[in-house]
Length: 227
Image (cartoon, rainbow, N blue to C red; front, side, top):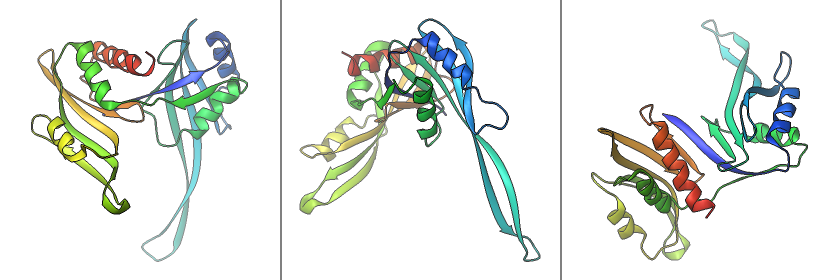
């Protein structure tokens, strides 16, 4: 599965100037982290942030002796930075984005602010239906922080053979809760597509998803968080 995540960025630095700063902070041999600029235009740039990680593994060999192995791994964040929505798009983001965001803010001269979008998943799903002109089924949902009697809280997953909307209403009606993810399913160009929408403004999708569909998902998101 592929993954995209979107974040809000506010900065007075132009894209061209930001591209120059990323080139100055390029990843090179001997550095712990840095950027690789792939393409720069007036209103957007494509780049990657590379972080070099060193760690030590110890284990017992068949003779009972402790062996130590030093390993090196690389964490990569591919991203597009734009002046318009979505300001920051992350491709296959790994866990832990602190080093990446610190590097991006440092490159901007600490004039940049980065924050997550707040998104209503049910509204997002309806927006995708409108943008694509399809009827989508909600096949699964994850909700947390559901308030119960006596101060108790619950976390539940709802799955349905056709659509989970009625089941969600039955379980959550009249309660405070947070909807964490929705799995939507729809037919597109004779193919059955499944997309998982997450409350951290991210999606998971298969290789079959087309650019037209991704554009529709972005458009639906923009309608919610900007307008």
